[in-house]
Length: 104
Image (cartoon, rainbow, N blue to C red):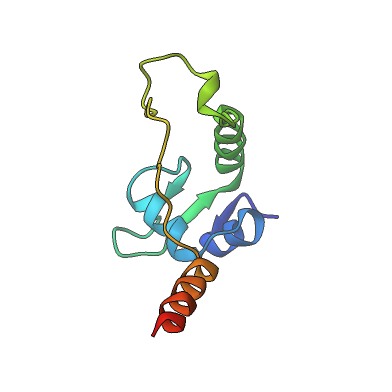
């Protein structure tokens, strides 16, 4: 595969859309992206640079905690016990309607 590739090659390799990669490149978020024929030309990506950046981004992601109970007090989670009254289910509504209709 050539070293400098169009956005469509990144779509095949990493997913997302061509438009997504071009927007990231225009925002300066993808290293190795440039427009060789000026500001209105097509975007070209240095595949080696993008691959190193992609791998570095994947390593920075940590696993999301599965529970807020493992965190310390004072965090962003609510200390409340949660909702005390749930919305009635469809079964409850049907039973309630049936009892009202029985009474007349």
